[in-house]
Length: 324
Image (cartoon, rainbow, N blue to C red):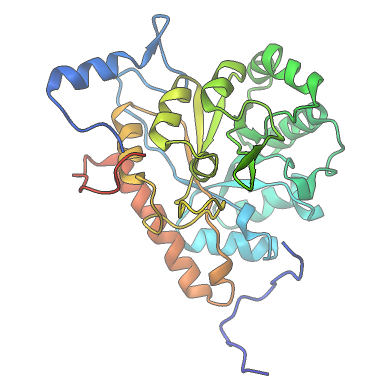
């Protein structure tokens, strides 16, 4: 057996797991004018006369499922994050608010968002009723001070959940003070055929049905949709972004920025120019770094700085991959 890296992370768990070209000034003005809807500014946006607030780039704990919760939070704090998105998983330590809240506070972190247990692997956590999951998740959010919760859209057979989403979710968010955002998902592709499990896979359709949207950049790519077109389709209801790159190979890879084919420079530039004031949460695969803790911290810090810089500076965008 080979010699183990003495610096390997302790606590590893043994369970499986391009925006439009700049153009003349009048073109840019028209594009910004289109950010108003029915005489009001888009959800998640600031009027252009107001200074945009500083956006704390969050990081999701979802990809850290192989690490003990303490180690995952240690890494995020060392990488310079202030706010995190906590994913509720099969690990009981993530399912009640007291322990994650205390561990985060001890490390100078704030749980600002919570991803409900809507993955297939965690479908029985908090019960099988998606609306009851959301209600319990809202209580969890209020306990830790989180202001948003990410959920998945209804499956095709979940008619009651679909009806609740379209008729009651917005009022529930306003009543609880917890913004419930429905995430963009993707179909399965088998021999070139699209097999749907979720409703509203088209971002435009999701934008018509759900009051608040979480756009996952990797998911829309797996769904074979253009990232910028998807953004424009949901921008009036966008409150949360799961940011990662994608290789364009049909896999939900959640790659680091600049490791795939997505025009993330351009996408983040669009968010900045449009005055987006919602959440940007990095959701990156960390599998390759599990035995290399220093490189993991460096990678997370590098990705955080990349996003923060592009959300706050008017950086020149180099020519890159054309829009597909």
